[in-house]
Length: 141
Image 1 (cartoon, helix red, strand yellow):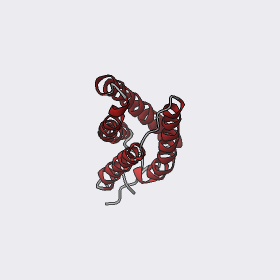
Image 2 (cartoon, one colour; image 1 turned 90 degrees about the vertical axis):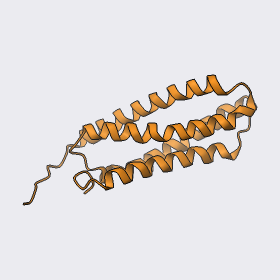
Image 3 (cartoon, helix red, strand yellow; image 1 turned 90 degrees about the horizontal axis):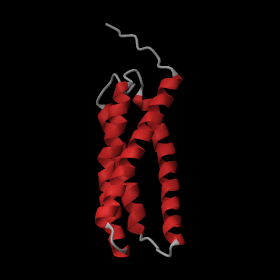
């Protein structure tokens, strides 16, 4: 029996993207505030802070994306992934440039591990999303 899949409207893709972005950014900022207050007391604590923050952002980013996109059951996640790769990657680059500039302005040069940890977190989050939806043929077509 062939099932007819109705093509979702473009606004649903945009709405899901905006909601998922807002939710994940708010949650990550809350975690970052808590971490910065509880971990960072001087410059030497920054590496640990960025590593823990990166690790915690993996379930927050991938989890909030999955929860929000599961509310929009008609969306083809395969079509969304290219935007995650490109726009998410650009967002990561912009965020890293901004972070490095902020610390540079106060005379702190962050080590490369900071960029590595953030990039690793983004890649793992994207892979979690990809593998989650790739196993669901009604969401990946």
